[in-house]
Length: 362
Image (cartoon, rainbow, N blue to C red; front, top):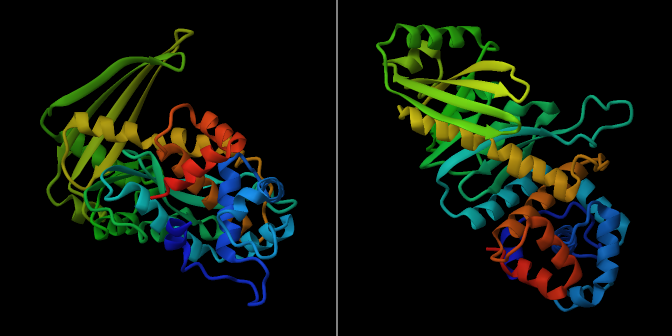
């Protein structure tokens, strides 16, 4: 509990001063419940009643355990910004000094829509450290504006020694400027949504002398055989020519796929680079970016049913998503054997297993 308080002691309580349940105790119980598989505030209340004796050995609980309404009200009222800052501090405690690939991507909370607005759910922007496989920052995309959310998230972390990856939506001067200001390098994809930038890279790559390339594959996966080839070139004055701050090189990856039914397809992707790199390194960096989809977004849905959550009022969707990512970081980093699913089940079955996970909050 001491480590938990160190990260979240600055979290302001949005409720009146005469509340019965301490804010940090409510959040701690919620986190413990999610570590045992709780999916919503009703599950948290059920967990609290089932584990009241165990919780009483850690917390004061002068008025017993919180009800479903208390969990719901707390998470609905919490301001996103302080919660996001606390999560970033918590993430830094797990990862230490960042290095390697850091991926940015948006995620729609598919169940977090108001009645009649199913096509407009809330969006979050998540930042993922590929080397440690940890979520290190997350912010609400205001009015579903992922760029604004990404800028807020990047401002929370130091990127010195990191390579930030992002898809074509984020190939913008403001994103590039924020990454370099935070000490990082970047690999930003570009395609037909930015025709001038795409044309610039295509022209420079086509007119350059033949350069060294690297090939990965053929790799057999997902009922297809894929071979990827990369080329990179340094372009003097690229930042001034393109208007992308810090841009110094460009890269291209061509993927050739043969499907199980014999069909073949070729795709070409182009990238702005803040520093020259070998083609093999570009292949590795771009491949690493997909960890945020496979190991964060998909895992949040499979383990914690995030897409199915219908929490939608106030800050509730953001607060609960942050709690889920905290739980995922803890479960993944704990020095125990077994799959993530097995670790969560053991925490639900055994007091000692849950205590062990919580004891490894760094």
